Length: 315
Image 1: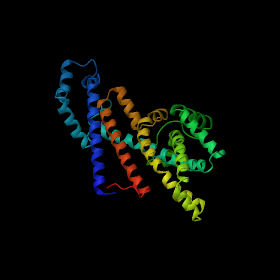
Image 2: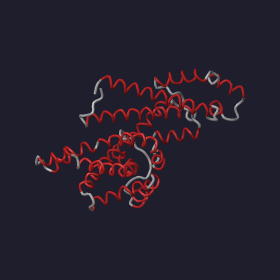
Image 3: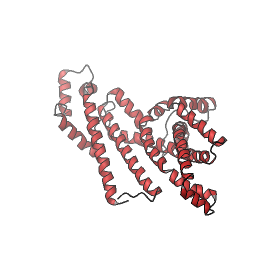
Image 4: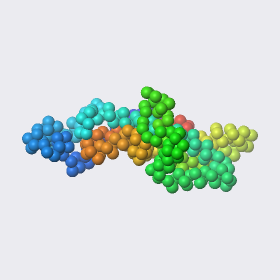
């Protein structure tokens, strides 16, 4: 992995964010919403509306408004929220941290469950463990997020009262409380991911187990555990890296349902509130931050590829 490759990927991230910024700014400008009316209300006088439009530069050419906005955004200044009047940048970055905490925890739980499950299903092909894995995967794919979340909340929060049903607690303030409040949403998100990843690990492991180098390892007299863990698993995990990178984007965008059900103030929920309130600065900031996070996640996936498979070189 060379420094030139890392520089090219950084340039690609910047290019992606630039394209997204143009699209987001263009779409928000086309929305049937007047920023001045949103700020002052429909009963504001014409003089007051014209004054706020002049102060915000809404009468300037679109290209100049974009350059001004993207210039401030590059320094972390996304403007003020039309809904709360507070700076958008810190608010969205804080929400992103909550969503990333939920997403990373869900992915870790998914890997702990899905990788061993897929490996066992491949080794025990056609047996009870394989059929049980298939059933779990089928159920995970069949149930959408809101159904899984509702069922888990009814069972673990309402009936058994083991976990709180809603709310968010920062791990910096109360780690135990944060774990308890995140348990249900993490379990909901991870169960959906397990269904996909377990099947992929099973399929990839079956392909690897029939390869020549696995036969050679067994002929050398290596223990079956060593063959599976050191040789088969490492290569079977390569496609999983791609899935995990894609799951980061899915969780940031699709986790809004889980955040809404369990009342987690993540970036997905914040973006939905901004769209409902026609809060243009929050919409622009949320979409730009999410796209940048997704681009970085894909770059980290490529780096992980090179770490897992020494045959891959980015030169």
